[in-house]
Length: 513
Image (cartoon, rainbow, N blue to C red):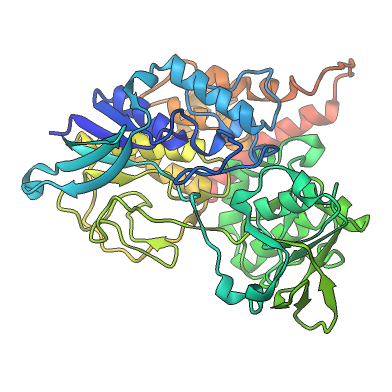
C-alpha cells in the first residue's frame, strides 16, 4: 500500500503535488535542488544549472482567474495578468496556507531513482539524494516527477551554416535577463514563440535594429480580448469548446484564422502561418503589431547563412548586418535520474499514458507531472494531474491496460482536464446543475472554464467553489476599475442573457454531456 511519496521539484507542479498527497492522507517528501520554491517563476540574475530561467519582465500569458488553483483564488487586488514576482508571491501564499514548506528538503539533488528488487510486488523505488556533499538512500512507495521541461535549451547550431564564423555574440533565449545587452545593437531573434517575441519587443526599445526570423509564422493575439476582457476568459469556455469541437476541422481553422486576423491582417505583417490547416498555439503579445508597423521590428524568413558580421535569409541575396543573435529555439527535456527503460525520451516526445504514467510499469507508482503544454493555464492542469495520480497511488482510481505511442506535449486544455476530472469524479454535470442551480450552470457553461468548477462535487469538494465562480468576474475587473462611472441598465444585455438560456438547451441537445 502506498504511503510515502517522493516528489522531485518544488515548483508549481511540486507544490500542488505535496498538497494533493496531504489531501489523500499520504506522506510526501519533496526534494528541491535550489534553496527556495517557485521553479520557473522565481527570477534570479544568474542562470542556475538544472533550473528554469526567466527574464525580469516576464508576465503570465494567462489571467489570474484562469491560472488559479482549484481551491485558492488569487487576491482580488492582483492585476489581471500577473508578473513573475506576483506569481511567486501567490505560490508562497499557497504553500503557507496549506502548510507545504515543512515537507520540502531544500538544496537536495536527486541523483538516481531505481526500482527496488521486489518492485513487481511492492512498486517501491530506491532514491539516492545528495545534500551538502553527502549522499543518502531512501525507499519510497511512489514517486512524482515535477521538474518540468524548460531547463535544457535546444540549440541546434548545426542547422545554421556559418555560425562558427560569426564574430558577434549569440546565445539561447534561456540566458536573456535584461534588454540593456541590446543597447545600440543590431539584433536577430531566431524563432517565434512567446519568449522570442517578448525578447524582440524588449530589444526594439533600445536596439538599433531588430529582426525576427521565422519559417513557420504564427498567429498573434493580445492578452486584451473582446470588450477588454482577458483572452482566455473569453475564449476558453465550455460553450465555445462545444462549438469548436463540433465543427469540421477546416471550418474551425478558418474561424480561428478569421478571429485572430480581426486585430490586424497577419499577411500584411509577414506573420501568417505557413501551414494554415494546422491550428497551432498562438503567440501572446500586446506590442508586436505596433513594433512592426512603426519599423522597430522586421519579420524575416528562415535563415540561409550566417557570415562574420551579417546574415543572409532565404530567397534574399541581401546581407543584413547583425551584432547579436538570440536563439529562441525551444527546449529539450530529459530525466537524468531515471533509467531509460522507465521513461524513454525521443525527439521531444515520451511514451506516457495521459501524459503522466509510463504504461509498461508493473505497478503505477511513478508519475510525471507537468510534462505538457496546454493551450491555457498550467496550474489547473498540473493540479488535476496530481489529484488523479494520488488517487491512483491509493488504489481509488485504476489504470486500464494500455499500449500507446509517444505523446507530443501539446493538448486541448479543457478536454484534457475534463477527462482526468471524469476519472476522479469531479467533472461538473451541467445538465444536473441546470435543474438544481441554473445560475451556476449558466456561469459554468457560458462563462470562463475556471478551475474552481472541479471543486463543486466529488472527492476534495470545496465549499467555497460556488462563490468563487460567481465572483470571478468581480475579481477580474476590480484591478482595472479604478475610476468607476455609473451606467444605466442595459436592456440588450438582459435580452442576451435570455437568449443564452435557449442556447444552453440547444447545445445540450446537440450532444453536450
